[in-house]
Length: 238
Ligand SMILES: Nc1ncnc2c1ncn2[C@@H]1O[C@H](COP(=O)(O)OP(=O)(O)OP(=O)(O)O)[C@@H](O)[C@H]1O
Ligand SMILES: [Mg+2]
Image (tube, rainbow, N blue to C red; front, top):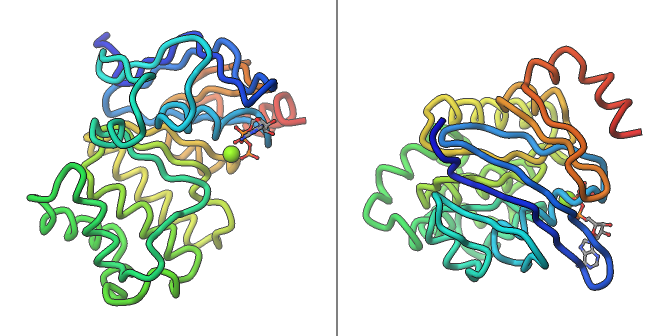
């Protein structure tokens, strides 16, 4: 098999004296969607924040396309094509939808703004209808769509989604799930998806890793998630 686009090996991460991740090894291959599951406090966000350069690992390695990135600051990691959707959507609230999208394109893809904005509007027609609206006045689900759209404007190689369905109504969960499936099917972006909603995760990912107390305690293919998600939930969440 080809080398992974994202290679994480034996990663240890601490928050002060708390060891949040221990010996975590995860690979994501090109065009693949990988799930990261685990209960509250398992270390999922810590892992995404470490990949994005907001946290420095105490040990272990992180490589993007074969190049080490664990010493890089966050803006460099964005420029290399890793875009994180945080649990907080951190949009520019005073700016319009369109201006938020414009800012998303600046770091990596300013020249292809027009093409990419059409793509984002195709995924989320609701954003097109609201292109001139201030981001702060959008609903939670609309803001989530805008945050995803803004990341797409950078033509990401790897997208890190941190519980994109949290707090959304079933309709929005469905729309965001469909959009992530499309992204995976187009195969241009690799996805690492943190999700508590196992049904949604099973619809999007090819493989998954399960974190518990900062360690990878299970990994497998999506068919296990589809068949046994109740059993898995009992085993690892309870
Ligand atoms: N800045 C911090 N300082 C100290 N401890 C932290 C910090 N951030 C996270 N932690 C701790 O690290 C552990 C992992 O937290 P993390 O946010 O990665 O979990 P998570 O799997 O994303 O949980 P959730 O599903 O609730 O979002 C938790 O015990 C948490 O309290
Ligand atoms: Mg989290």
